[in-house]
Each structure stands twice: as structure tokens, then as C-alpha cells.
Length: 141
Image (cartoon, rainbow, N blue to C red; front, side, top):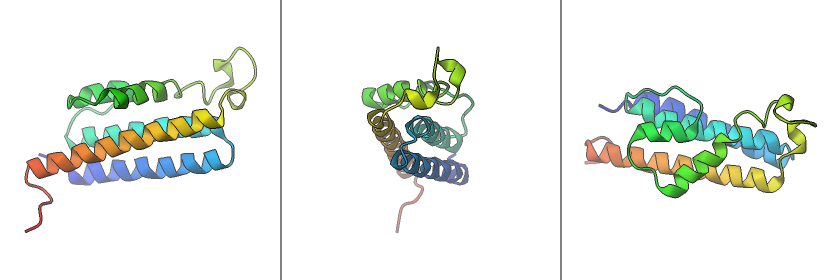
């Protein structure tokens, strides 16, 4: 059974987090863009897991994708792996030998992170729509 309410709660949060990441990018806060892009993708995959009634704990987007067991395409999985690298060092100065996270992330990193998050969200939404149709939810008469 699909849990539409849980899916919607989580996917809404995912999209709002991505909007926040885009605002950070516009302000030149690239480390936060990368981190929030990771968070956005994580929330999207958790939306799918919660919607399916599956275990949705953890912080690795790639690990969460593996739990879905619906065969994420290689580019989706690759994007998840890249975003996973933004979970800790984007936020903590002690993740670096010197400087702070703001010193290490570029506009290109931020834009790529947003693109990966957008692709993951799109994939999740397509899978959810397909599952709903397959199970007879959301069809119009």
C-alpha cells in the first residue's frame, strides 16, 4: 500500500530545501548550496521510501537509493555519490586542514549539486507516479 500523505510531506520538504539551496547559490554561499542540495536529494529519496512504507534512516543518498530497489539509473546513483561527499565537509571547518568550508566550494560545484538534486527529485517523482498508476491510484475516470 502506498502512503501518499507521507510521500507528499517529504517531497514538499525536499523541494523547499532545493529552493533554499538555489537562494544560497545566488548569494554566493556555495558550501551551503552543496549541503542543501544533498539534503534535498536525501529528503526526496526518503519521500519515496516513506511512501512505500520502507525503512528511511540514514544520511547517504546513495545508501537510501539502494534501499529503494527499483534500479536507479547510473547517472542518478552517480549524482547521489557526489552529493554524499557534501554532507560533512560543507559545514565543518575541522573537516579541512586549514581554512573553512566557504574557502573550498565554487559556483560550478554549487550548480552541479543543484543539477544532481533536481535529477534525483525528478526520478523520485517519476517512480512515484509510475507506482501510483501501477497500483491504480490517481487515475482519472
